[in-house]
Every structure is written in C-alpha cells, then in structure tokens.
Length: 184
Image (cartoon, rainbow, N blue to C red; front, side):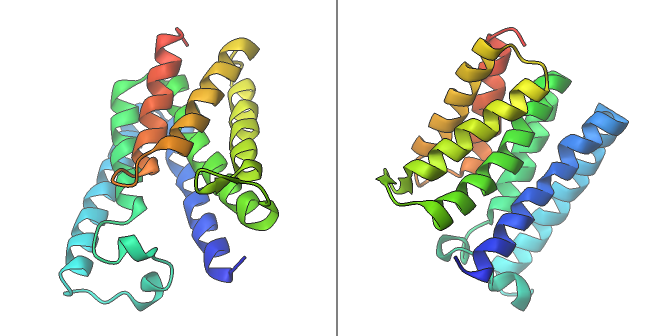
C-alpha cells in the first residue's frame, strides 16, 4: 500500500465533519457548512481543471480519472447536501458516516489484505465495507434486520456503482433511500 493511498483514505475519512456537525449543531448549520464547502470546491475544481490554479500537493493524491474531471470531494459535498436536504437526521448521518468510514476502511483492507478478487475489488474489502456499515447502523440503534438489509444495500452500491458515476454520490443517496423506505 502506498503512502498516497493512506493519505487519500485519511482525507476521505475527514468527511465525517459533515455528519458530526449535523449531530452536534443541527440541520441548518450543517447545510450552511456543506453548501459553503461545496461552492468553494466547485470554484477550486473549476480553476484547477482549467489550469488557472496549480495545486501541486493535491495533484499527487488524484486518481488518474480525476486529473481532468472533478474529484470525489465534489461528488461527496453534493451528495452530503442532497442527503441532508432529502432525509431525516438519523438517515442522513448514518448514510454519510457509512460513506466516510466504510469506504476508506474497505479500501485500506482491500489493498492490505485483499487476496480474493471480486468485480475489480476484493472480497476482504467488500466484507470490511459491509461489517463496518453494519456496526455504524447498529450504533444508531437501527434494528439488526434493518441494519443488515441497509448495510447490504450500501455494500452492493459500493460494489456495483458504474465507472461513469462516483460512489461518493451513489452510496449516501441509495443508502438514505433504503433506510427511508425501511421506515427509519
């Protein structure tokens, strides 16, 4: 595992600031923070992609597909904004925690422990995603049956998000929809 992937995963994990702010200070502040960060990211990404802003340090952490298109951070902030607007506090925070915790954990586990390939990922990474999602959901007092179902939906979303979409967008929206349909 490279130092680059560790730093990238730590950055991904830092997105927990949004659901934590929602829990601690409420929806309106979380919306304000998320909207401000989203607008700042849009401007920064536009300047970066048009060559008007050189971010050497950031460039070292970009995936190849992100060099000429928006980074996963933009998709995360947009998804966070939609998730906060569309879903209840519990559903939104669960969905965002799953993305910010389970996604980087599964990446780390897959890179470090992954021995069994599965659809471009590893069985070990997929299982890490599922079980960490399950833990998050049960910490929010989601009943075990609903938690298993929602963790399965989140895991399948991470596994099957097509290449033209970004899982930073699909995971919280689909997980939030599943939790809402379950009546959480």
